[in-house]
Length: 251
Ligand code: G
Ligand code: G
Ligand code: NA
Ligand code: MN
Image (cartoon, rainbow, N blue to C red):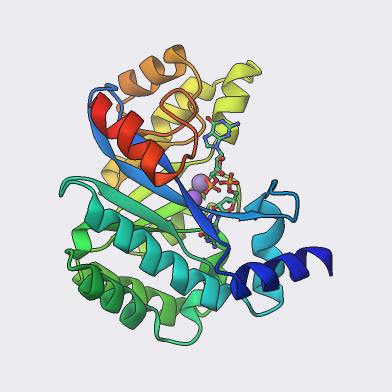
């Protein structure tokens, strides 16, 4: 109940925020854009993790409205940044259920007066188990708008190669757990990462690795041909004003 009350209150008071984390070229020299990450505070002003409240918002029927707000807000923000900067938006499987997702995205693009190429959407593997044909056709419609489609958290779920064939993904995001495995010295992580990058490239996808925290990790991923990097090495999720002041100026 407690988290649900916080969600209800955030809806009533327009209390949600988006934090933006940089997505950087693997040579560290170019800024691709930012991932928009949802933030909600409790009564004391502390952030509650979306890992905690998003599943509750999904189960209690709030995620549709929240997700539509995220789409509008992230798109509005993208319009305030230079034209080459892309903003990436996380989508819940539930947002594909009513069949109005494409309309919500295209309305947001129109309201913000930006092209679809300024926006990426990130979907997780669980989405794939849900009404496959309808999801695929909606992803194709989003691509027609110019929107890029990324598979998020690759390597954590079912990770079937069949899904990579079947779904129109443009990008693969390698989950942060691979950087943890690398640091733990698990066997063959470098070779596995290299293989994932090669596989993705052969399937026509670009690759982002998440959770990059050290220069050594970044150098390795660059040498393996990974396209983009995301992680604390380049910046934590931050308010848009901070992203503009501290990140846009650095590139
Ligand atoms: O940013 P953070 O590490 O706290 O995010 C935790 C999880 O919440 C991540 O898996 C992320 O994909 C998810 N998440 C963050 N923002 C959103 C959002 O706007 N919508 C959805 N559906 N999930 C989000
Ligand atoms: O599931 P998703 O990949 O969308 O979740 C992204 C989350 O991972 C963000 O909420 C962010 O706070 C967290 N994150 C991003 N980069 C790093 C990192 O370099 N280290 C750690 N520990 N967490 C990260
Ligand atoms: Na994500
Ligand atoms: Mn992810």
